[in-house]
Image (cartoon, rainbow, N blue to C red; front, top):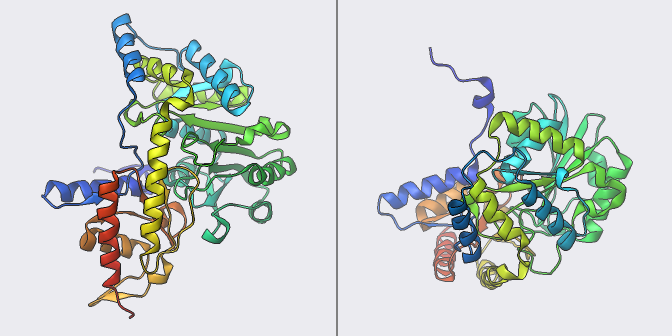
Length: 399
């Protein structure tokens, strides 16, 4: 008899990937679907990065690299952290992995024991919750709201803390809300960590370069709690390198050593060719990719204006990443014919079927009052998609 493990049966499929797959299936049937579901820049990787990869092929970077990454790449990442974030790390405290997702998985599997509690301010990135479950941990969701820009406070952290709390995971700029934790916001998290020296924090900064108001502050910049912080970053979002699969952590040495050990039993090192491309990216001045940030800024302004015209959509102004996370709870209970929109999933499937626009239910991110829309698409497609959504929503009536 074929029987899967309890582990895989308990694991949920990523909602973003599931919705992307569904929209792709409809496209293959000839249906004109616009997908706003997947978080992928619609730019090609810059030429100077691709040239570095081509050179790596010619030179012969085709052998097994060291498990935590080439030493010179790790040294370059350490220099970048000092240059851009004022963080002091040794190359040995950097571990390069096949994407930031693996970096996060490594950390969770290395730190979390069955029964340990992990604080997840909601909304959170979909994979945090499932990775905690995979490790046998207990996700403790901390609700936030659009009224406070989806940010967690010191009081909320204290209220959800217990003697089983082991780890806190959050992202800034945040996927899915686009919220950016300012210095004063991070100070509250730092205060919580000072009060609880046994708790570690994972600060996911993969959207660091897509920040519309300037410098991205790092939690590890608070010296009093630096040894409790693991910083995760990578190249997918800021350098349009999603398919290259390269991310990294900067962490206390004992965490870095553990993640190297874990990675050695799963994937070993990421591709040597990818690592040479990543080295070119990390050594470049961030201004080399500012054209992407400006394009996202323009789209944010337009999409924000279009969303305000849609009845029942309440939005904040995201300061980073490339998402809107509108509160759509005002639409719950409305109907079209015999079809009732009871929750976020009902609304997303209605928009997919009626408007031919793919979005993602907010429940997948820990907030079922919202849905996520990515604006990593052309302005023409975004305008078409938002017009379709508006028309579909205006067809709904009170139950």
